[in-house]
Amino acid sequence: MMIPQVARRILREFRPEGRCEILLDPYMGSGTSLVEASLCGMSSVGTDLNPLARFISKVKTTRYDAMAIEREFRNIQNGLLFYSDEAVRERDFGRISNREFWYSYDVLLRLSYLSQLIRDNSADNIDFFNLALSEVVREASYTRNGEFKRFRMDKKRIATYNPDVFKMFEEKVRRNIIGLVEYKKAVTNDDVRIYGFDSTLPIPDDAVAKESVDIVLTSPPYGDSRTTVAYGQFSRWSNEWFSFEHARNLDTLLMGGGKNVSELDTKTISSELQQIKDIDCRRYCEVVSFLNDYKASIINVADTVRTGGMVCYVVGNRNVKGVQIPLDYFTAEMFEQCGFEHVTTVVRSIPNKRMPSKTSPTNIAGKKVDTMNNEYIVVMRKLN
Ligand SMILES: C[S@@+](CC[C@H](N)C(=O)[O-])C[C@H]1O[C@@H](n2cnc3c(N)ncnc32)[C@H](O)[C@@H]1O
Image (cartoon, rainbow, N blue to C red; front, side, top):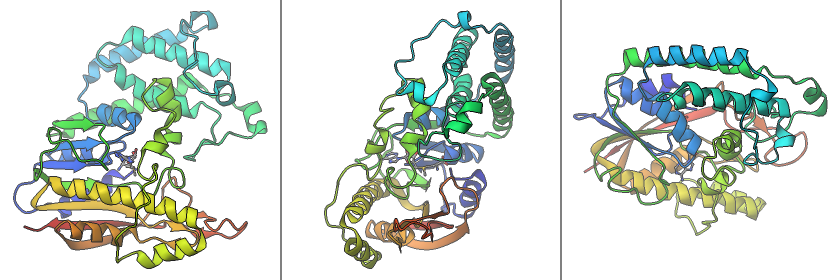
């Protein structure tokens, strides 16, 4: 996630001159920049291929009736008091792959009972409660917490793992109600449009008109999902629980998931690419495939920005086989090719990302190399 404080500061410091009404996030994730746009009075448009990301962003930017939610929450909580195995109506878990590996049967029944209570007690606010449930679905599984990839706990941990599913849900709903009340107090524009188009393909004109966007604020992926942050794996429990589309193959659809290995014309990172190619040709192809997709998306995004509009990309410089790839330089170079000028790059150290700060990219046991300790906010302005 991009943290809200960073998004807020960027929007304050790098507002374009003149009109500042429309923000675009072509990789919106959980919608941090859309929320911040709403809070500072701007309309926003976001897209993400991950249905869970769209679902989170939608709920976070909706002005639900907090009183109705409190009332429905009390009814759900009452229902929890009457939980018994026999009270669970929906017991078909066929949509969840490898369910016995990831869940105890008791947890599945309790999750199903929560879904049932949400359906029975809420009409207009179902998504609000399902968002809390989507987090519990992951946390109550046997996954090792704090990791993006699907790793199972060890047997010893599983033997004693007994998550209190209902308590987890209640805590998340309470936290989200506080967030909702704060959001409603502060929001000054709730014109938020959420899409699921692929930003590496031409952006549909009816979603975002050419030259209409005043500011782009986004944090794109750093590399393909298989070898960096596995968004698809991370969200698979929730995507499967809600039967969202592409639950099982999402990582192959995200940037770099295909095999677009055509030669890349770049001055800024050509020597790094050559070094990786000399060490490992397969890894080189993966990196180039990601960068080709990334370049295509930059061309599409650039088209939507008005003259004088700003682009702020928060990127990380990942390490592949011991070679650091300066994605900040590459980003600036690609936008320059699209008629932008480089304004500045702000470097920020990242204390709290889910990425490990050290990995062994060389695959030599014990050899640890820094992956990403800094993030780079690349700021560009569109020229005439
Ligand atoms: C670093 S995350 C964005 C995080 C976001 N800024 C936040 O605060 O939650 C990158 C996002 O890009 C999405 N993504 C990857 N490839 C995409 C593509 N081709 N089109 C649209 N979204 C894509 C992923 O699903 C992921 O949610």
